[in-house]
Image 1: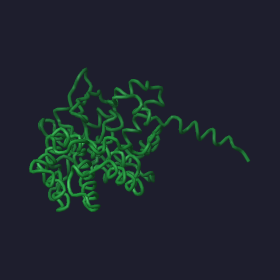
Image 2: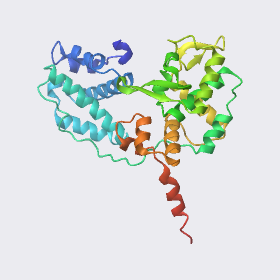
Image 3: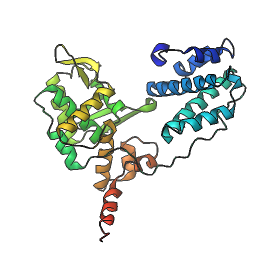
Image 4: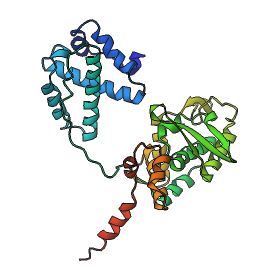
Length: 319
């Protein structure tokens, strides 16, 4: 399991951790295996921890207790020259949490990252590209749904647009998570933090899921994944779930076929669905519940209704 989280342990990293005592390296591994459950967070935090500890070793630090706030601050300053502010803040958070873990395990007496302030970052508008309704319809209509793979792709895109599903939740969906209630399909999404979120399907999504699951004959495979890869040899659906990277490649390919030049990705359709809902006089509070956001401030990042207002106002400048 450790090799899946951290593929290799560079000698410098091993030396600086083990120099702090025989239990320190075990504590380091436990931070990723026992303390962090989300695989994406594990990978990001492992990358940040390795980067910082190797950076410290290159500057003459020989053990964990020798790391001081000035080292963390200098590392953060250096990161800021090449990485975005959100990335720097995430890496600082990883180091801060790692040393909290070391403190509770009595590997180090204090957390050197606790007093280090990260760069300021204020976001009032999300950067995720959003499609106009016409563009979304254009993309979906260009998908060849005479084949199972086309019906799969249409259903996956519809899942993100109409249920505001994160790509991770959509791809982890199993057949048993698609069920009928009041003559309409519902989906049970497994979101971040182990939370379950249930959503009724829009009539388009209801139809697309039925067509896909019927054509793929997946209804009886209750424990199987809904969205699966295509087997290279048989050209049929496999039992393996579709990876996020494959979903991204599919979306880019479908966008190119539809003549859409925006740099869209998996998250685009979640943002597109939320924006479309709000444009049609939907409630921000209900949108937050539908998107399973803990705060409406997060939902507001997806609200692009102001883009059209700004454009109209700019066109008032006549020279």
